[in-house]
Image 1 (cartoon, one colour):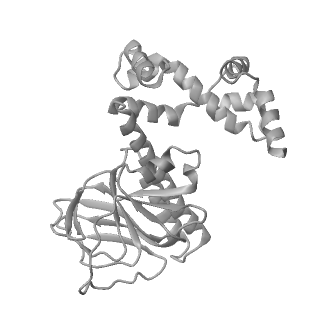
Image 2 (cartoon, helix red, strand yellow):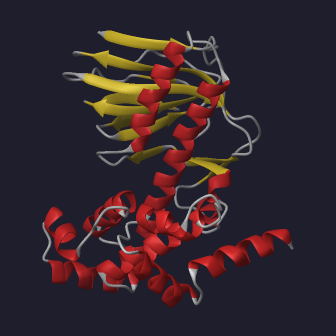
Image 3 (cartoon, helix red, strand yellow):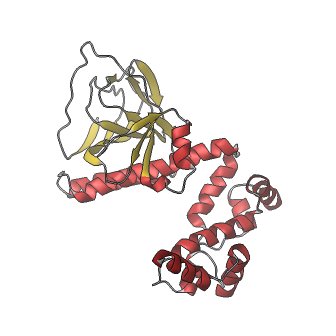
Length: 313
């Protein structure tokens, strides 16, 4: 068994003695005004028959499984954490492996605390959706007790980068590792809230996958035919599907996303209009300006001027 460690602070562990065990929380919500208190991270790699030790931590532990299945019990309840799934171990609650893994197992882990208070909420409860449906969701950490991650997810990638950063910082707690750990949780927050929003809208799983891909590639030259073929759809059918669930045909959906992104970029006075158009996937600046005026009722320049005038007022 191979285990990579990046200890940045000792982890206090105690045994439970006559302690009331809390039930497994569904998700936690905490203000993201400050970075989390990062403690340690690492990557466990086992070739076969791994059983997690029995312990109680005084910090949260985020687990992200890449290969195999981790069998773990928390608070007396057994869980199976499979590939591309994450799980949150809670402070003060006993957890242990109740079954040996079969074959190779690999997962990343991170110990952290919140620099402030946090609340618990049911999965899909009002507290989580109250955050998800506001424009302030970037100001909160919303961490699920367990959820699936996309195959090509950024959460695990950021955990890999955090581990490398901690190693290069000689395993000492630094501002860099604290902010890197916070970025992991903010990315997980965004992915989780997006999943919850999708469930509420009853979006087909396949359509959600396409929308996620568009979100990451809107700056490229996208066509209805190209996107549809990439995901194995008929272009006409996929465009109609977008119309049904979003109110816009595929390309109109893409262009509205681009315009929305461009509005954020327009708040940066250092960026030229043609540069913003190109960054958002418009090869023709005039086409971008025409669409912007159609959707927003003003030109990009007028929007920029109005934004800064409002900021001054």
